[in-house]
Structure formats: structure tokens, C-alpha cells
Image 1 (cartoon, helix red, strand yellow):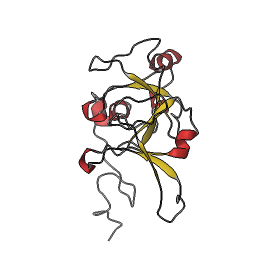
Image 2: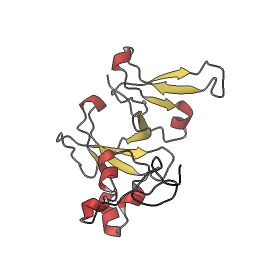
Image 3: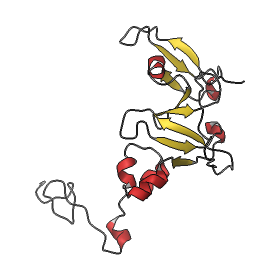
Length: 187
């Protein structure tokens, strides 16, 4: 199925369908996009409010990955200047974070295959620029659900730094060596 540059495409790579909320509530009458796959076990879970999409440029495609709740926009001119290859050795897609937060508007590269076949490739488009300006990745990755990024920026446990293991403090008396259950003040 070929898609025009104005089509909203779900994670399956299919043209998303437009539906209208019929249930009584604050969103009654509001339109949204969802995966067009009819078989429930094959649906990718794509969802995007139509008014969210219309607020953005109509030359982009929207993708939302439910497992991390990020909304993505695909740029039609993504790889004109330089080709970034994913681990599949295919050209990676240039996407833009559209979810509210610190990374909104920030571009990144991801595998261009459908989610089920994706190699999981992820790279911020401005990664080289960030390293050149010496901006800590932890500031920019806040809110990111990319586990490889967030795991690598965690502070190591004191025992991993060569020092002694740091015992937890009791929640009642704040002393080390015991917990709330066996705190001498909890009798």
C-alpha cells in the first residue's frame, strides 16, 4: 500500500483510519487516528488525536509507540543530506518528538522497518552537536524511555565504584543497620 506524504501511517506501516469518539464525556465528537488493522492480535496500538496532528505540519507522518507513550513525526526529507544506517544496514528514518516535555521538537533516527521487525536502532540527530557543546546527555534524555540511554546514564551503585556497599537507612529513625520492621523505636 503506498502512502502519500500527507497520510498518517501507523507503526504497522499502514494508513491509519480516522474515527470519532461517540462515548459521552469531554472528548465526545473528537476525531482520532488508529491502526487500520482489523485483526486485534495484529494491531500495533497506534493512536493519535486528529487535532494534535492538524496542529503540526501536514507534510509529516505521525507515529506513536504505546509502550513508551512518545509521539513521533516522520520527515519526508529525512535522509536527503546524509544517510544514517541502522543495525539492519538500512537507512534510518529521521523522526521528531512531538510529545510535550524536554525533548519536544528534538529529532532522532530510528530503524525504518515496522516495529515488529525493527532492530531497535535509536540515535539522537543532534548527538554530535551535544558532545561538541559538552551538554550532559542526562539533561536531554529526561523523559526518554529508551532503556539503553536511560540505563547508561544512571549513577552506579557505591559498591560498583569500589567502595563498601552502602546500607539503607531505617525509615523511622534514619539509622543504618536495620529497617522499619525491626527498628527499636517501632515497639
